[in-house]
Image: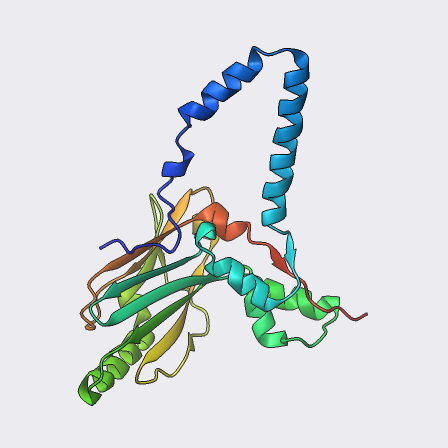
Amino acid sequence: MMAAPIGDITGTNLIPNNNAFSIFLSVARKPKKYWLCFRVSLFMMVLSLAACSPSEFESADELQLFLKSPENNLSYHTQHNNMTISLTYKPTDLMVYQELGDSPANYTQLNNLQRKYESYYFFILNFSHTATNSHAAGSFFEKVKKLSYNLHEYVNLTTSTDTIFVGEFAPIRTIPSDRESDIIIVFKRDKSKGHEWVQFNLNEFGLGVGNQQFKFRVDDLEKIPRLKFAIVS
């Protein structure tokens, strides 16, 4: 079952727009002064698009908002009965921030932490439910705990040609509550090189949500703006 993305990545918006093409042809037939106006307008449009995607964020909160914005295609959610599953990509700089916080670091510390994480993809898999009885809450706790300790059985990434298994990175888990749980899932990123997309696959593990798939464009994962860190000499 393909999950509904927070942002649509089906690519339908990439289909050439016939109206836009007609406008281009009409401009092409105009005198040079119209061409100049057209080029200036196009330049301003490019500048405005660039302004929407900064190369660097001043705070982790700003980066988090970027990750969860629908148009950036870095976060998904799907619902099944009283259960919600969310999956959000967590870039290298947020893993570094998790260790440094707002404390300043020198270049050596920062580079070492970035090297520690940059060879991996990190995804935050979140489960939450609205069941009211204690039996359902206890069952939720046990099944999510089972998943977190057996990720290799239920989770992988696929490309058009390869399967990428859960990385041999120290497991990062949170203790599930009665209502909600996060699991940080790690994959080596080298096998994604040269591919257009990776698909995160979550197989049924007893929670009754079925098999879930979440697709990400590799370019979207690789070109996330950086987080600005406080540097000391």
